[in-house]
Length: 310
Ligand code: 13P
Ligand code: SF4
Image (cartoon, rainbow, N blue to C red; front, top):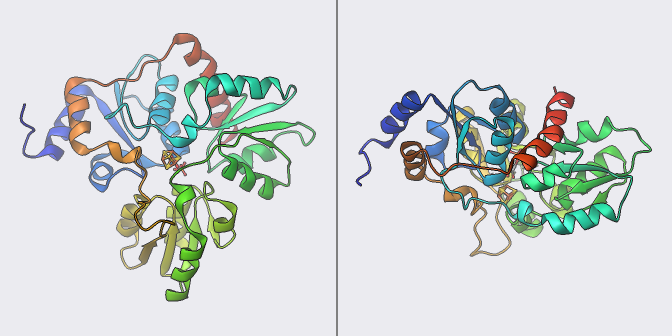
């Protein structure tokens, strides 16, 4: 069937018909961000999913994010425009291997970064995001041994910030690993006034050159508040759409990847398109479903995160 000429208007109409809310991550393509009711980082998106009174949640993000929304709303319809929109971090931590890892470290408290599957969440004591990880780890008793999964880069960053030792699962994000320290420094020579700002999923050699490190929301706030007018942005470039909207007079330079052919857009996030979002709403599919026992077990550590970061 032919798509409507004005997809924006058609999506707006479907929002009303379904009593739906569209939650989008900053790494979504600009036209999806422009049709969303709320755009945020992973913590903000979970808080919105927990608070919404809409009947249908359309999640413009990746699978683990939509899953989190479903865990928080087991009786609501949660749609994801493309079910194939996964995450390399979530994939890097298969449940059976993680169960063994956990068994090898008894007495450890398990903190999992929200970028993991519902099965991993169900095996965790606490969930964190890049915006609250340091704050949450600081709230745990100093003698408590900790497993941190699945992102070793965020884990290492949290260890440096808190001075705590943690056992790290060795996962990483394919997008944040592609940034080149050398090319960022070359760019800094071209733009000596620019501030380097980075996401904590980046590797340590890149992070050490950043004058500000934070979640997507924190990066967006920072460029608004900073007295600097130029930024080398070391994260997925989707965030630059909002940066340019919020502070159009400033310059945002996406950090280059190592390989000239490689692209630093997240291939998973970018599977969603405005067309697929429209079709998902029209067809009320594809929807997120989860086994009841996983759903129940995964809810506890997410709720704990929401309480501890309030
Ligand atoms: P935040 O938006 O929470 O910083 O997460 C970044 C990310 O990589 C999401 O997949
Ligand atoms: Fe996963 Fe990285 Fe893509 Fe975020 S940017 S969804 S962490 S692969």
